[in-house]
Image (cartoon, rainbow, N blue to C red; front, side, top):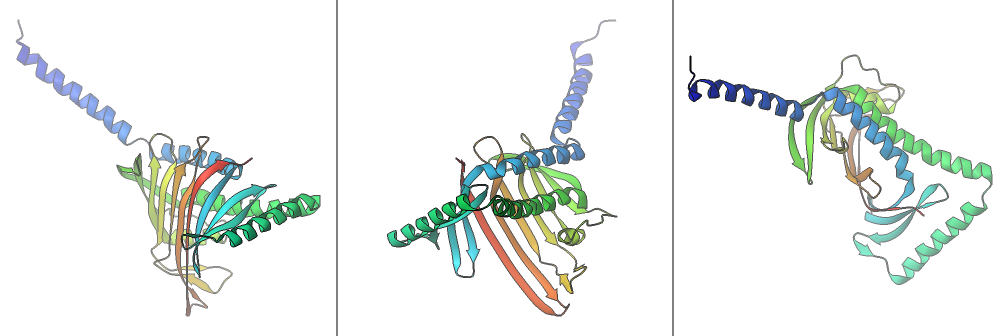
Length: 265
């Protein structure tokens, strides 16, 4: 029996198309647990590298925005004011701020071993606090891939985060997480966190404090690549709404931008 070309080419083409589609789908939607695990490893590398950089930082204060040059001096950063509300300091004020930095550097060089250790330990404690909070995000939520898109030039997976049943916050800072949900955007090449956004969806009582975190509380973190191959924060903001003694309202806001990362000397 002789088969005509049209009698076998279509089934083969259909089979090939099915296999190709399945392969592409597997590439587009890999195992979410693997993505999270690799992203945690990437974040750990970033955390270890963070204190090897100097950077510029703009913070929102009660008086508007203030811009600083952050310089690592003997184990901890020193923030030298360089601009206010987008305007550079006058020549005189710039010299005054430079003098303050020189005096601080001299003070650190002259401190006792115990004082130096206490200063660095206090700084590292704050870093561990931030890092532990980021790690808790991967434990407090279940993640589901809901799509892929391009963000700031990076092709990312979009993961939806919902509270994980049975999660027990290990510390005070994490107690708000069971009341939150959000999204996590992970770079498909490096598994870095390009963008994290979380919002409180229901009131959460904080044990040990007569306070309750209210819906509308949110935080937003954006990271970007820096020299040396790691990623560091480029923007962080929080808006918190709470009731103290479950009656009196208390709102706060933080908005920080980071850029110009350079290896510390």
